[in-house]
Length: 109
Ligand code: SF4
Image (cartoon, rainbow, N blue to C red; front, side, top):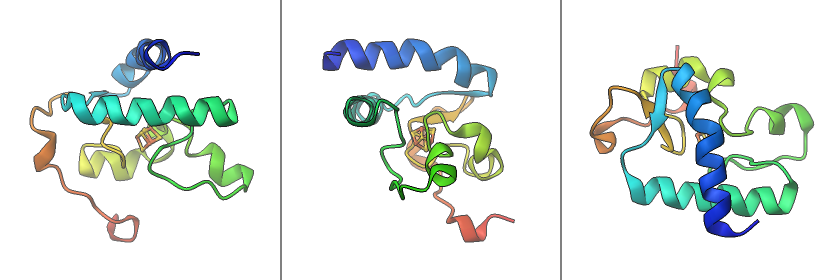
């Protein structure tokens, strides 16, 4: 899988999935491109597009919850921030992703 083709394929595959969840790709094209590039690297290495901003533990339960897009697993947290951890996906009405807060897991009630 070449890099540009891989990024395009992931975009096409994920767009309808995240749309159905009320999310979209971040309008920050530089960030989106960087995250997708990292996803392609992880996909090449593991055969699975793991999250580029979360560490793998080798424990299946944990690691399968950080396969992109991991929105369904962490929905409550992401809905509070209106973005996912990496910022690759944001709520559909977000136009300025730089203003969105990062809320640590322990502070989500
Ligand atoms: S935090 Fe975002 S980029 Fe990372 S796996 Fe989840 S949805 Fe994908």
